[in-house]
Length: 349
Image (cartoon, rainbow, N blue to C red; front, side):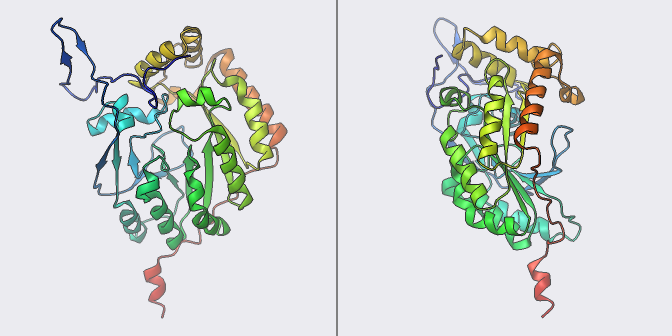
């Protein structure tokens, strides 16, 4: 197992299919090579008109999401959100990890959304695209301010993260939990830290993720685990072990997704697997093709259905593990009736 560039998932830049031109360094030999030397992260301020987005996807369980950041320094090699970075004019490879867009006015935009008379209360996923607790959040605290707005308006919110930084906001999450307004989920891909460090270089260690799960549940914050993504030939064998352990630490639910190599991510992942695990690269790629009906990625509604013996094995392992360890557990229902606008309350006096 090897890696070219420490701290980065992608080892290449890939062409943005939405751009007609691209930069390259042309050597005297006439060979174009990619400029990879500058790996310093850049932070780019963005002023969007809204922060809440409606989600149109048959594969997600929520209707709305909000993303304080675009791009993610965690550098997960498999991340489906890489493709969306191209809409901003950047690449899905290294650009996704080192050109981070942040939205400082997100809390104000969320308040504006909640004060819209046509807003109908529905749980919002924070965040549905890139991790709301990625490294820069420690400094900017945009996610924390968004949670404060949710508490102020008593609006339901769910969180999915790979970072232990969520521990910082336990004070707010505890208050939301008492009102049945929050669900937290931690993403655990593997219990093998060596594998985790190359799959998702800048995420929290396995130990810190488990400590976070234990701390959240100890504070009565409803917490579940996403074992995601399952990559056959790399981490699929860990399913029973992960489910058993997180159940012991108080997880209320366990879910999974299989790897999605949409768009340019297939090129990025293929380069990564051949460089990092050359001995098993073909096996992994062939098994991914098997569960996707012969392709590295199934488009449209076809991506919901998995194919082949490997998919059946993954599904069966999860079903048995959940039945054994989390049979009678589930997230509490959100209280959708708690929502209130502070300015309207003041009018009563």
